Image (cartoon, rainbow, N blue to C red):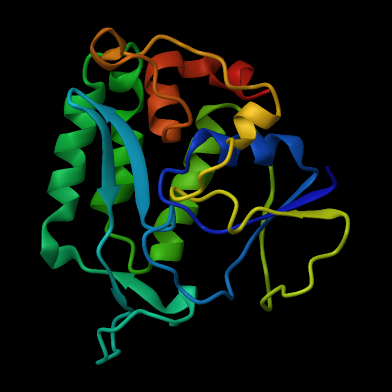
Length: 214
């Protein structure tokens, strides 16, 4: 595909990265209004008890008095570090992937970004995306929309609403024949769980992650 249009995402799912690898040009929608209960503020990992959602508490950016985030531009969304989510996410990620082959190689990269406490959601997600692309060995320029794209050009694949935890149809991995299994630490308890956060693939497959996504 020539280009793909994506929403920002927190430790995005595997189909997100598969779409990036297929595209010649990648755009992140930075002018949209914030939407709750999406991958913008949610990541799915494989915990001992099965599927676990990591959720970010969104708030208005610093200096704004109104705490409401509904219909607020994504670039004005900040993160509420007073909620204790940072410690919860570190603990959950460590518990989920501490026994995987590559966790010790990557954990400091992940946690350094979280511990730096980026001021905005878009900054946090962008730094995570750039890091994960680097770790899987992909050189891809990430562009940001300068205005909201309402009418999408024919040569652009719009995945802003398609890549969504509430989407009930087949994942893009299934459509593209990429929904292969790999070993997961807790698969003996709950079976293979597909299309999880990139954290899952990186911690289990390490440098081989790129082969899975192509």
